[in-house]
Amino acid sequence: MVDSHSWQGKNLKVEVLCSVAGIAQHIWISNEKGSLLIDAGDGILGDLLSNELDLDTLKGVIFTHGHFDHMGGLHSLLGYLRMIDRKELLPIFAPEKCIEVFSIVENFKKCYSETIPFKISCKEVESFKVFQIAEMSIQSYPVVHSGSIEGSGILDPIPALGYKISYEGESIAISGDTGYSSDLKELVRGVDLAIIEATYRKSNQVSKEYLEKVHLSEDLAREIGKLAKDFILVHRGKCN
Image: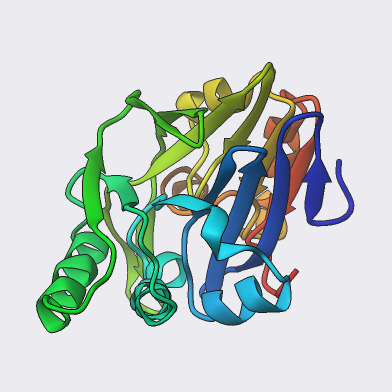
């Protein structure tokens, strides 16, 4: 298990900028061709700038799902890119029918239709879809994730995906928010690095239904992480 929240392979670099259950998550992955951003939670701009990441290298943004802690900073990110006069196309990928992400993009375009200096393309991603960003091959995997409201129980499942990112013989798996499933195991199996959510402390403190439909526990995340060559646990309750 990687103790820090950055990882450097031979060809890929990972920086978990923040991953806080119910607050924010954003992960930066880069190679010599460019960078991609996985999720854009609240505070994304501060984390990008404080880490001195080069936004000129940003080739695309990918969302695991539409809950606020994973996409709440999208409007700010788009606004900042507009302010600094970005020229390059920005592709945005999100699960099919992820209305939270796509509605923010459409509203941004509506607000600034005449003054956005770059094009934005929104692309719905189906399960097991393969696409590319910065010559990284990205394959989507179905995961199971439902929201919950304190005192109101588990809500209906929402569109949610994990992703396997491959480049020059290296691979990284990102679980997104997910319950325990066989598809999750296949996503993680054999990759060089798995980034796995671990929201709950222990399985015996949470019902089986929550573990299957909402989030993983730390012990289950570690079990899944051992299917990879190395792993990082995220989404554990404080900024990393």
